[in-house]
Amino acid sequence: MKPTLLCLFAVLTAAAQSTTEHLPATDAEKMADALRAAPNFITDGATIVDYPANKGGEFRVLRKGTSEWTCLPGPPPGSKHDDPGCFDSAFFQWVKDGLAGRPQHIDRLGIAYMYMGQWVPGASGGEFHVGPHIMVVTPHPDELQGFTHGGWNGTYIIHLPGPDQANKWFLVIPIHQADK
Image (cartoon, rainbow, N blue to C red; front, side):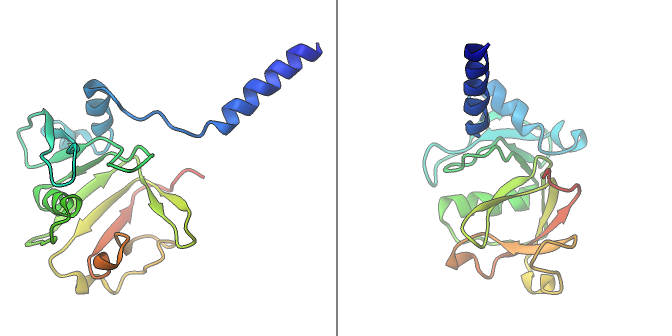
């Protein structure tokens, strides 16, 4: 009985310590993952791309679409979490410019879906999970200043981490509470 309990304890302990989530690796897994990011009426016609191999590189097309939408699997370079997203053309250009280290310019509203949520840096240095949400980026970020910055009470504004991102606010519209 004791060896069985010790084996069971060892298995449960190892499983509890293993917090690494499975990240999509093959093209088929990446396509399936990207399709989880938004409703079917967005993903059905979207182009699915994979992240560039290096900063400023080209996105690799996994599936050519018929609409202005582009979906990316998770994780983005340097992330250990699966955060797929779907972006209209304006928001996707903003993402591409940011990932390439180029100045980000928005000339019209841009929309993004992240139905699987996203892990983001916390104020204390840790990470927290934002639940499923829609994001809006605007050429007039000053118009967003009436929204809360905390995210504790519905729709809020946030900017990407880093000193060069401080004036690049975007609106986050939660559509479901994050899993606890």
